[in-house]
Length: 323
Ligand code: SF4
Image 1 (cartoon, helix red, strand yellow):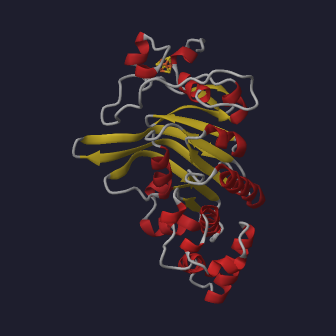
Image 2 (tube, helix red, strand yellow):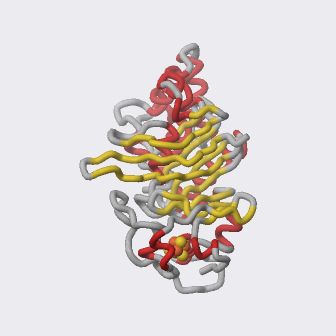
């Protein structure tokens, strides 16, 4: 059984101008010890997936359909009390922007101790501090640093502190939302390496949300590419990055440089992602797709299973042609 299984998840934001279909019928699975990279341009619904899984959507956001099965329990149907137990102990998140995610008024260690004791009230303060210091060692921070305030940390240290906090209650699934944002490339690489090592050491399931495909190739076993609230292609990273079939995946990969592959000209995807208040009819990518056909404007392509865990939603692929 998968650790997390998302089935036909739909999450909309209700605005005065109508519903924004931020996540519109997506499916994927994450197993123990496996990392899935959720990729796509800004505004494609990646973060909304994370907020739906934890059920911490902002005002106006609502899960309107589908299932989120975590260890067999459907999180969509859970009572708030049970959901509170699952957050941190079952699923935790490393938010983007470490400075904003930590409370500047409290020492980092105190914030972690508080999280431990809130979820495990029987744990004494001394024990919680010992656990916190061990967590600091695990994430490569000096334990004495637990007594410092967030402003006394560098960006990389703050991100490590947040990872320590996310691991405080031994979760089974860790969601990392753009964990490298605002870090320089060296520190970013160190933080991602740490996350990858922790995933293997603790047998964690992981969802890594990013717009940077190179991060996914370094850190994840598989990827799901999102466009305008839908997953257009998913599979293991070797399949997706070697032979992407969906024109959007191809466009994303062509827009990134590679230091390993043969020299080639980088190309961008023309146009911008659509307004999800009024998404395009049929395939949502058709206004930007270089291969769009008449059928693409009328019919939304269904995800087609091509191989184990490799799915593509594209009429071109359905017809046996590739871009
Ligand atoms: Fe392009 Fe049509 Fe495939 Fe959409 S369904 S990606 S428009 S070819």
